[in-house]
Image 1 (cartoon, rainbow, N blue to C red):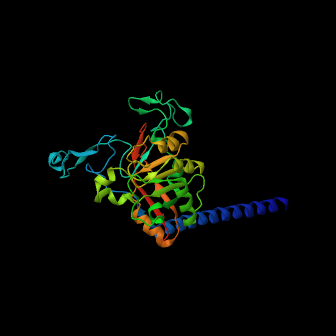
Image 2 (cartoon, rainbow, N blue to C red):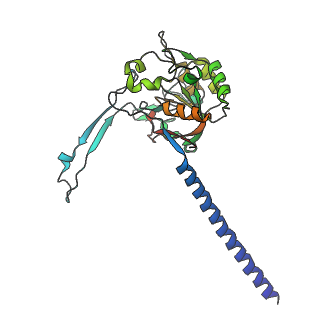
Length: 304
């Protein structure tokens, strides 16, 4: 009798366990389905310009070039069956594209990289030994982001050439937009200069608005993960020139990634219509070992 009871209890336990496993699988499938449906119903906004050999680029950096290394005419008949192919060769400064992200090893402050690494000792003929773009964390491929729309807040199409964005500006805009910047966030800043990337490349490449030193210190105090804007140097470049304090403060001193050459025009309009300035930023740099930066394909996801 005792054995029968034990056998019955074992059967009940196994049946119950199997039921729990099936329910767990069902729950996981539902969660996966809900996620897919949510993403499919969301609005995707590109944050990229089309990059080519005529695109504006900071004069400190090598130009971009692309050409066909092999053509369909040249490869016809190489492989039996009628197939031919074309392949290209690209030459570009790894840290510049549209948009581009700077690796943490891109900038040093008095000979030191973020974390105190010796900048010179960290270099090799094939790139950086540490803090290359390949260490960009995968858990930040999708991240909470906010847009601080400076041009819209100041009611202008674009800020003036050389106009500095201050910490007070960013504080006021965050308050007006009703956003709270949290540790680990990505913060994008719109100057309005993105509209000149194609339309007026001379203007885009000249003196430009952007965050100044106080803005960089304010962002660093928020312990953000990444910041970017819609011009080629991120920080303000007035007529008197710049010694790039934002790059030093953000990258070398605080380990905050910088993104340049973002296209924020469509995103600005969409968020203003919704009156919600928070969104999901998707940004995934290619894992190029030792690279000081990389072009990226960035986009925002917002509700429809």
